[in-house]
Image (cartoon, rainbow, N blue to C red):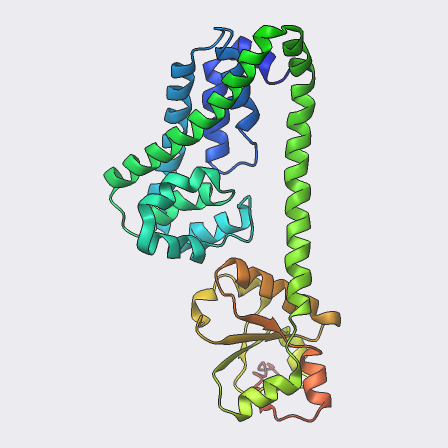
Amino acid sequence: MELPTHILLIYGYFLLFGWVLVEQLGVPLPAMPVLLAAGALSSQNEISFSLALLVGLAASLMADSSWFFIGRKYGHHVLRILCKLSLEPTICVRRTQDSFGSRRDVTLMIAKFVPGLATLAPPVAGENGMSFGRFLLFDGIGSTLWLTVLLAAGRFFGDLLKRDPNVLDWVGRFSGVLLVLGILGFFLGRVYRRRMVLRNLVASRLEPEELKRQLDAGEPVYIVDLRHPLELLPDPFTLPGAVHFSPDALAARHLEIPRDCDVVLFCTCPSEATAAKAAMILHKLGIDRVRPLRGGYDEWKRLGYPMDAVPIATPLVQL
């Protein structure tokens, strides 16, 4: 298999432009192998280093400008979607927004080197009212640095190939395999990170006794009831001051949840699985002080702690 060097020799700059554009638009298709191959081929005079840099820069700026204007128009709605598609789920929208508060220019210049931040930075810049000219300047600097580093690394490797041309055949034969392994590694890494975050959230469960103590002491606590409405019919009670959210609507209503106090999630599912998954969603959206309640509603009720009645709407029956 002779990807991407063989295809680069055939389609050249069109492939380079399209690949960088697709990656910068958020599709998990790494452009690094193509850029490295382009740099290596430039040492053989098969591809112009400067032209490859300009083509990659044009694709990068086109994709970033699109996200910039999308972020300006749709704000946090598109950011929430990008957070789910981010290469690095632990890099959330709020952390990106915080970085723009004091060092937005630097953030744009280093964004391409940070997994996940490269996709989130342009729409966050648009949402935060950054002027397009200023965005284009610093995003262009960052894109140029990123492209230059990868192309130069490939060029350095290409210079080594001149000493032993047989190495180029070996690289062309196995580069496609390496590309596939890289993409597969990305997906496996993402699954592993999600599992680790979920495991950490489950490990950070809040004991009912501790929550009771916080409530008795008058500490600010935001309690979220994640149970299905049908679960409330036979037992219409909830924890004191709890707010009912469905897990599906949690992300859409995350702006209603405060960031300056503990957020406690509870359900009735085994091992608080729903609460843990909801906590992971909120964690990615920038709400860090989230803890599932150990034992959920059943454990709170078993301990005999106080509860609030939940008004249940009874449907009218036509006779």
